[in-house]
Image 1 (tube, helix red, strand yellow):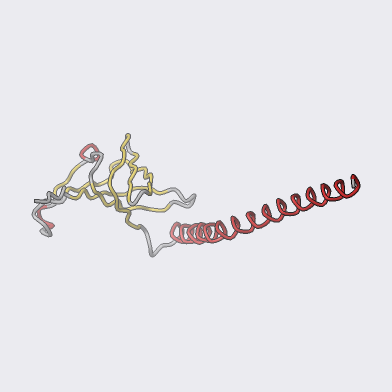
Image 2 (cartoon, one colour; image 1 turned 90 degrees about the vertical axis):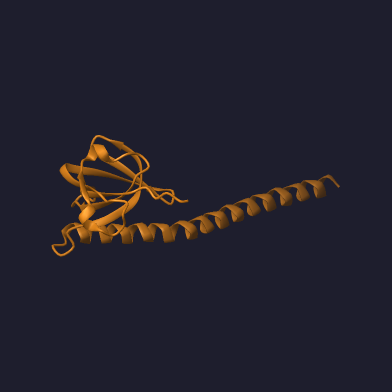
Length: 147
């Protein structure tokens, strides 16, 4: 009788170890299947950024978002819970669009100090060979008042 209970205990322990190992392996495979597409997406983005940095045809691209913070020449944009930090070049051109709409003749020249947290802006970006983003110019959009 004692021998049967010892055998049963050993079978239970071995079964538990097998279940735990199987669960751990299944969890690892599941996690890998979730992160593999993200890693591939990151590798694709890196490839695109590298091609942009060496392109003589595509000299800049545009980032759009709401200013989350600004410190010196560094602007952090936010859009849909995603942040992007951009260091503006010294003497970057900054423009303020008028609230009158599409009349670009009403565009005013501004400075980096005119950019405030909460502003909606476009930043013309240059991708440097090391992958860093350099801000070349910015356009501040007028605040829209909903009535």
